[in-house]
Image 1 (cartoon, rainbow, N blue to C red):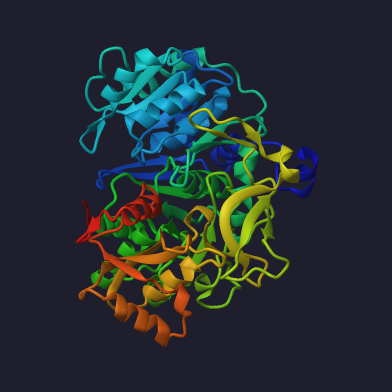
Image 2: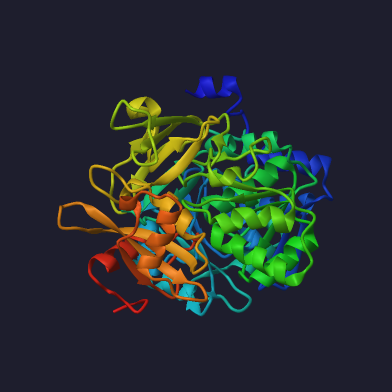
Length: 546
């Protein structure tokens, strides 16, 4: 496997530290990171300064006794220190484990215990939550946790390491003295562990090397011609695979600039995208929609953008239409997973509005396999289960709460079951239909994404999700959970609308629930599991759980 991927160029002999050294030597005064804190405070780091911080952070980790194979967990907002810590862990050959800020103490403790983390880096407080106190309370139950590191503007809690004092203000010579000389950068060791959200089951840890991440970054940089001139901004968390790829790995490989905002506010985000001349913008539908609306209201359309990416099971048709109208370029859809950084995306040579019909085709790091239950070609009514294989797939997965390790190359000849339902898009790519856990129907499946896309075109539908509920025939019917627009739609009106557009009767929802908003997780994905349970138990009344 290793020889095959290396020979094909999917994998390489070096990791991201080589990229950092390259840009430090070739473009030392070019901007590596532009970081906004609380939407206002600005920190710019050139590649020379960023490299120095990485070396300083690596020395600080070494001084704490962190070495090869040790796990360093990081739960921080979109602060530039996350990027530096990832590379500092690479420098001392530790394993970097980013944790979303929205992960609570119960789940964080399980992550730290499962991995045997020796260091946990957190903010002091964030959004009125006391993260430092949370870790302090769980520390006695985590015998392998040697250091609690707190990033704070004030005094560090008792027993904790003050991040600023130890990582940023300690004399450079002292940290150099604690750091071994750089060794060969091994891109094939386990370097990063990312956890899935667990919306359809137990959260899984995905074990990645820098080569599995490179297999996702390299095709995008190559196919899109990304380089030092590009500025990258995502609406997602830096501690999520989305942020790791589009705000760390891809900008670093291209030698471009990562633009960070730690507090989401559409109007301020729009100003920052404009101020920095952002060229690559990526995000989930709710966030991109908010940016489009903010830009439309401002009357000052962005002109620097040359690539806008959106990933989700259902991308509203209004968003696909609005992006070229407002920003003058097509919306690119993409598909990816925590386990599969080698993602698919629509390309420059695809037909107009192709994001309505496809989630893209993968780069060289991933193959697709559509496995149907019948010999007939997969259709939206009978989609196939999507399997993937290649250098852009994680080495292994394991259950957060005790599930066994599953090495991907040793199962089914390396084919990984994504749990997604999809059909070929006719251009060597895929069209996502939904998740196996979210499927609705019995002998025949309701094409959830198609129905949602059509309903989103209705003037009285602001947002919508279809979830299943049991009927009397041991099958399932569809319930439309709708956030209404200016007027509240009725079930009869929605069905009449779908019938007028020629939609099959049994696809259509037979129940309607109106809600004030759809519950979403930290990446913008709708909590279908939560809605499904509430609908099944009759807990939604007047748009609110009872």
